[in-house]
Image 1 (tube, rainbow, N blue to C red):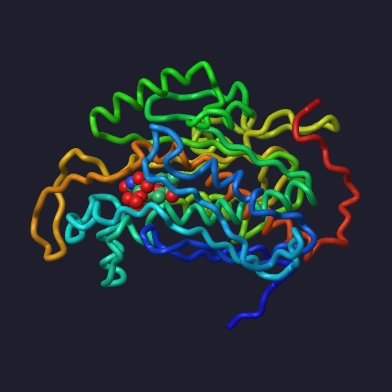
Image 2: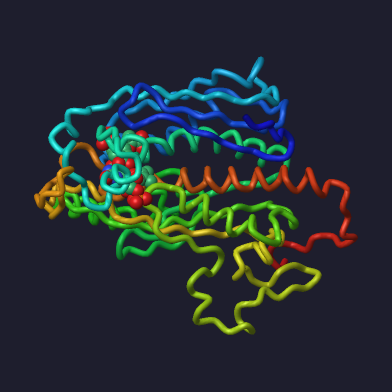
Length: 366
Ligand SMILES: Cc1cc2nc3c(=O)[nH]c(=O)nc-3n(C[C@H](O)[C@H](O)[C@H](O)COP(=O)(O)O)c2cc1C
Ligand SMILES: C=C(O[C@@H]1CC(C(=O)O)=C[C@@H](OP(=O)(O)O)[C@H]1O)C(=O)O
């Protein structure tokens, strides 16, 4: 049993498996008086849900979230918010024939080694189906962040395999199935993924996500550093193998004179740090990036073992994303929102009365 920390922490607990009857979550610590409807959640859920284009898994889920507690007459009450999303299009027979073999690089082998028991249907608890609940919780966090703190979050596809994509129009990312912010490249993306599907193969991707309007002061100087928490949150998404904050691994090749974000009363001259210095937000735009591996469930045969340890070969049929990164943008946004709201509440709880005596400078030099 644990006492709640309402007013200090924003937390999410999820439950459910890909082929069970439902998935869901409990959102704790949401401030009261925020207008939230199931339709608000749906807007975000629709951006992530499967089956929305020919470039993603053909599993068809409406992903309708039912709010079962914590909201009264359209407003949050400050009590735990319970959300349930029914699974309606499981096709568990796809998994019957591979129930005793491990898909190389899916969670199958490691999961069984840990628990000794495994729901083999659709990856069970290890399926990215669970991320629907994070997106629903993230929709609540985004609403609070926007209304109470003026923070906005947006992500986009920065690379699909060898195709590196610029961000020429961030809003455009919301209007195509790739979350691509460089609209002129859409045909190239379509051609690439069509050829990939013909090969029966999969490919990795990179997603960038930014948050604007974050004031200076959110985060901690040690352990729960804001960058550490964002890295953990993004890394906790299925298939994520790398996270960068700001310039990330490119800093290896930078000089201090180039990397430091020089300041003047007119604002910051650059944003190499990704808006976080010493684990605390600086007031610059928060910039994070994550790399997702290629889908492990592919029809090309590969070597593996079965549950009795015997060598075998397998190919995975069924409905799978050829590039899991194509649906990961809303998930990255949701995870960033969850971390930022948690730290907004923590900062307020500890430092509401603190005044540095220094007005924040602009995120970017005017
Ligand atoms: C949005 C999204 C969709 C995914 N879709 C699939 C899929 O259709 N088939 C699959 O094998 N893996 C898919 N994955 C990846 C698996 O969930 C992931 O590989 C698995 O949980 C093992 O975890 P790991 O890759 O983090 O080691 C998806 C991941 C994400 C983020
Ligand atoms: C259902 C979703 O994506 C699934 C993620 C997933 C996986 O292994 O992660 C495998 C596929 O599902 P199934 O478990 O039916 O084989 C995807 O369709 C979803 O995102 O809602």
